[in-house]
Length: 140
Image (cartoon, rainbow, N blue to C red; front, top):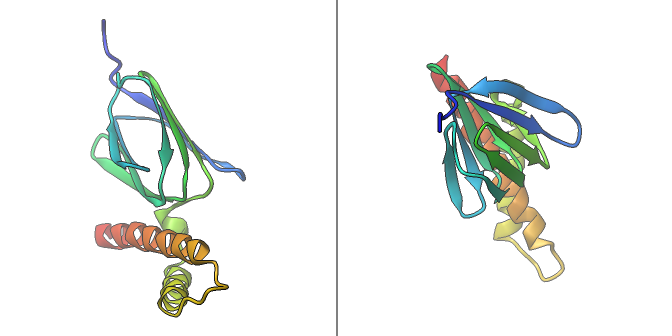
């Protein structure tokens, strides 16, 4: 069996198709840890955590913040259905930093009537966005 030399990646959110490209490698934040995906990968369906996703074409690496969802892997393609996703260049760093501070403050002064899970998710989201934005700044 001849393995493909590229894998087609599609990243879709409820609002838009964010990426549709043939790539060499993909790394996604799976619910149980990061998953590396190359062309010819075995079929797989997994949940995604909030985190940093990257894909590579040649030597060009692109970073995105992904906010939960699912990944479907086939030998010739990967489809990511994300609740939310942002490319590095779309992230407003000051807004993400303010969201991180708010979430940390909420978690540090948690009360019985507070939605702790919502604050935890807000913290994960802001940290993912800040990591991806930092990757972009480091490249320029």
